[in-house]
Structures are given as C-alpha cells and as structure tokens.
Length: 87
Image (cartoon, rainbow, N blue to C red; front, side, top):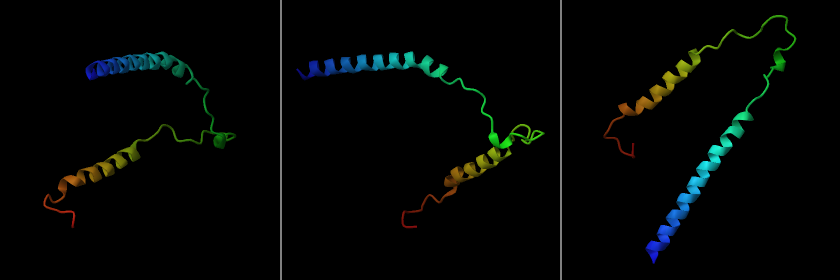
C-alpha cells in the first residue's frame, strides 16, 4: 500500500514540475517585452556646454580588485596545515 501511495505522490510531483516549467517558459516572453525602456538621462550633467563625462570606461579598478580578491582567496593555500582551532 505504501508503494502505491509513493508512486502516486511521485507522479503528482512530476506533473507539478512539468506544469511549473511550462508556466515559466510561457512567462519568459512577457518579462522580456517589459524590459524596453527609454534612455536614462543624468540630470546632474544637464546644461553643460561640453561633454563632461570621461570617454569610455576603464577597467583598471576591476583588475586591481580582482587581484586583491584573488590574493585573499589564494591566501588559504599557504596556511600551515598543522594549525588547530586553538591558534
């Protein structure tokens, strides 16, 4: 009797999972069309006679942050393996 109940429950879960996937796929186009927006204008830069923003975006700070975070992450490799929680 327990096997029949488990089998029914598994079938029900499978059906619910399939319907959940179908619902998620059906709602994807609705969310994609809602993403269309106009260009956002920064009001702080309005009224200047020339372009006051820097051309392009630099990636230097991204690399510096990546190197620092990499050093912190790799620092665990150089810990003494014989340390205890009492240190």
